[in-house]
Length: 212
Image (cartoon, rainbow, N blue to C red; front, side):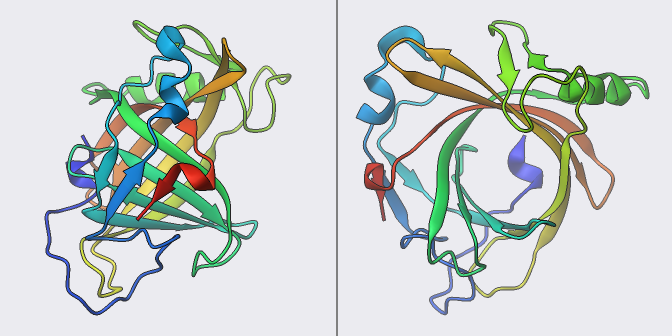
């Protein structure tokens, strides 16, 4: 799945990347699992660990300003932090995502069909209930998804190791106990034009629910 996003490089000591609240390549992130366990069986979130070993890092510069900092484990868990600056000095949003399903299209018409699913006001898949569109609201029958390049790093030298073009949309559903589960649906294309469709399930984290 996300093997295309990152390799398995080392972790040189000289920092060249931002550290979001001390989170960066080579660090261990300690999570408070009560962040999701308090919702019991209401969540489908497919992760129940309490630590993340960060082996790769991504950076997205948004067209409208702001940055997305992504931190990946060896088993494709993604900690995502949004900030107003490249240095990630003040985070405005933190989410934790785990992979649900990867699809590798084998026919040319699968990709347009997937794009249509990203544009719809609701999203579902095998074994999943319906999640409603969060970005831009779910009132419109069709909504163009968000697109961006993600720069991926295998180590902390600051040199981009690979880039992935992504077309994505965020959906969510309310769960019992005043919670919300997130679904990130992605069309992912490498610079070598390898394409996959990814579904990730996640949830928001408070700043006090993780540390590195």
